[in-house]
Image (cartoon, rainbow, N blue to C red; front, side, top):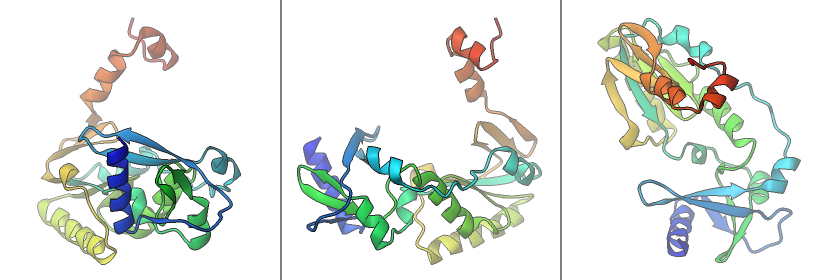
Amino acid sequence: MKAKLKTELGDMSKRGIITSVEDPTPWVSQLVVTPKPNGKIRICLDPKYLNKALQREHYTMPILDDILHDLSSSKVFTKADLQNGYWHVQLDEESSRLTTFQICFGRFRFLRLPFGLNVSAEIFERKIRELFGDMPGVVCMRDDIIIHGKNQQEHDENLQEFMNKCSQFNIKLNKEKFELSKDQISFMGHIFSRNGISTDPKQVEAIVRMPSRTRKKLGASWE
């Protein structure tokens, strides 16, 4: 794990995600390192005390009902996932210094929005909606983005506009999770298709597998 961490930190430094710190900083946090299914590691800031001091902007996060109407009449869908979504958000100098962390290799600070801050999700959501929110046929929910259209031509036009904006603002997409021009797609626990909207069977199966006590708390017991 130590060797993987050193390699990952070196890569993040080259990509402008973090930078080394020599001078004193007002905050120093720890890191949480967890393995990914693909053998790589995920680096997450552990700002236990910093989170208590941060002032949140309390941006209203979207809910499923906000997007159901937009997708209900569409027939063609593409699903895109931002690669390391938070890292698309650049930090100013003051904010960056707050993210200083210490490990066995020294001290570093994030130049991009890190995982772990209690403000990260709402800042990221706001930034993504500022970028894509007004685009026709584009629905954003955290780092998942649906591009859709009532027919193939409308879908393709919306997709082209989306890709142009990604290129313009250097938005990187995860090619392993990119689903192109589908007649149905799973999104936020639902299946969206040319036939309408239905509950994703995988979500129902997950509820059925819950212990009965948990299902009762959720009001979802069939016993």
